[in-house]
Image (cartoon, rainbow, N blue to C red; front, top):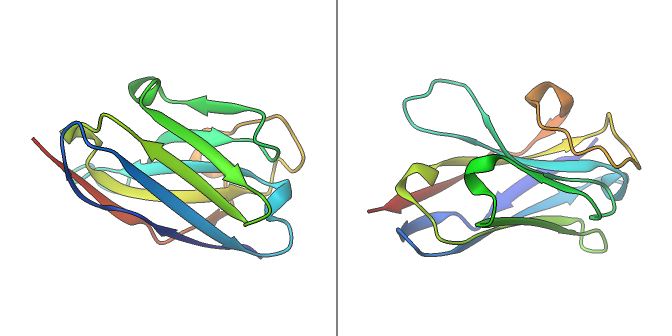
Length: 130
């Protein structure tokens, strides 16, 4: 079992930066690929893929809309994954979720679909005002 707790969300202005953290508990965190997803207001239950990182941190993958602005990283010694968000835009407003993929342990795969992740955090709200 892996439990995930996100933090670092808040209300910022367009152009500002935030760093989200996701602290994990469980024995196998360092083996799992990790991902960030977001759910924007008014879009129902659909969660949009944002970024993913493989178990070692050597492989990352981003959705096009955040490339060059967001950076995903991890510290396996601290069982934590991060999402550094720069140049934030109003359209980045959403609840951000981190997720752990136990389907791709010790792999270079950076999964981007919700069904590839078995564990989810509770989410943290990010609001970007214009």
